[in-house]
Image 1: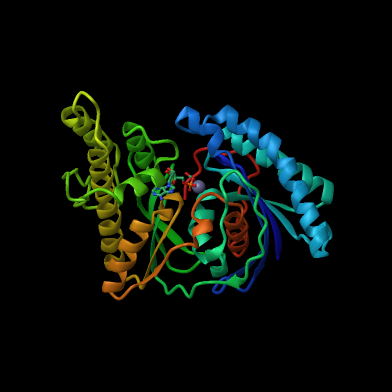
Image 2: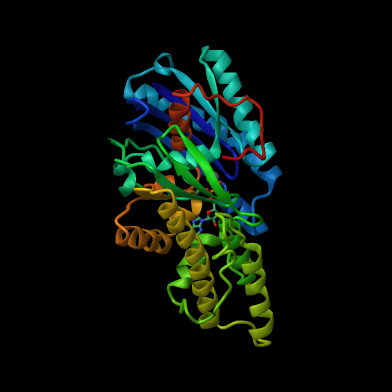
Length: 364
Ligand code: KG4
Ligand code: ZN
């Protein structure tokens, strides 16, 4: 199945063409095109994503990316006739942003008489662990357009598997019994992990998005310097809570910072200690869930999975317990349209097709 996918749920306008093969037990993907136009630089001065600005940028970028896709198809010697299906993210996300992708997808679906599938963005993140290995060496320069040919691959995931889906809007622990059967074990009760990274970054005067900035600064700091709380670490469930941790950082800065502000060393220690708290909670809860459900594999995905310190810590912990550990190729951690094609394909095995209307609060 050749899928053209569109993603506009937040601040990346993304389009892909992906050849999807294999049965539901062994899906595999060949990425023909992966185009991402990041708006990070536009939202950065505002310290976060501004929905109306995102909408305006998607309106501008969608036709540009589509033209690039058409040129790419022409160069590669195939036409729109070979596309089987169009897939578009319908939620969760920012409503004005989602609508732009949906309206654009509707127009091309009608024009080229192709079926249109609605896709859940979080399922996209979940299936990003299946995307091709060869993407490991590719780079998506922020703000630039990317067109790359990746190889075909899929990890040999052994079930049951327990996964952490951690993004800017969600922190979900999920159990997969196969690629098509899964259930949510728990989720955050307040802030998502990525949101906590972004908010703490703001407290430290670091630019948006905060995750990569905190990770960079944490490398210079001591993760044991400050004993920040590990919220809900020992709670008898698989839920999370990160807003108290953010408040603890706020109080620490208020109480500790000299009048002249924080030194670079103090900031680095806060970043490292905060990151350690988030990692401890995520990893411990995932490992506890894995043990409880007899998991053979654990995986990590969503924007926060781009954090190399977290990836390494989870891999170490999982390996020490004899579990297989999967993380997406670096390119596919943050928002992209390849994962949307993958979710549309895997969803097609259970006849899944979300209504073609923006659902800002859609969940896993
Ligand atoms: O999945 P994503 O691109 O968009 C959503 O669906 O939310 O995730 C974006 C989130 C942001 O909160 C960002 O700060 C976080 O992922 N993030 C990171 C890192 N890179 C991105 N968090 C921690 N460490 C990183 N290296
Ligand atoms: Zn996302």
